Image 1 (cartoon, helix red, strand yellow):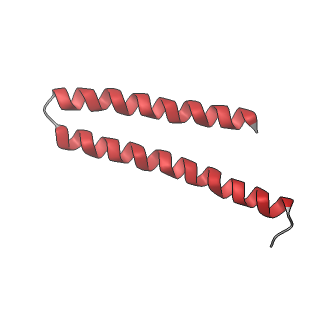
Image 2: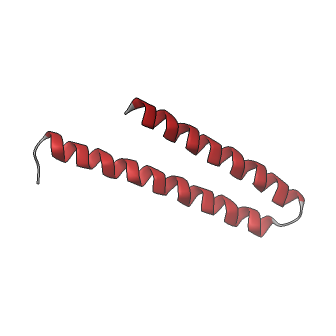
Amino acid sequence: MNGLNVDLLFRIAGIGILISVLNIVLKQAGKEEQAQMLTLVGVVVVLLMVIQLINELFLSIKTIFNLF
C-alpha cells in the first residue's frame, strides 16, 4: 500500500509540474484563456485521482468493520 501512495504522490507532482510549465509557455505566448483551461483540467484530473483514493478508503473501512 505504501508503494501505491508514493506512486500516486509522484504522479500528482508530475502533473503539477507539467501543468505549471505548460501554463507559463501559454501565458508567454499570449494565450491566457487556454492557460486557465489547462490549469482547470489539471485540477480536475488530480481531484479524480483523489476521489478514487477516498473511495478505496471507504471500501477498506467497510471491509474492516464488516459494514454492508
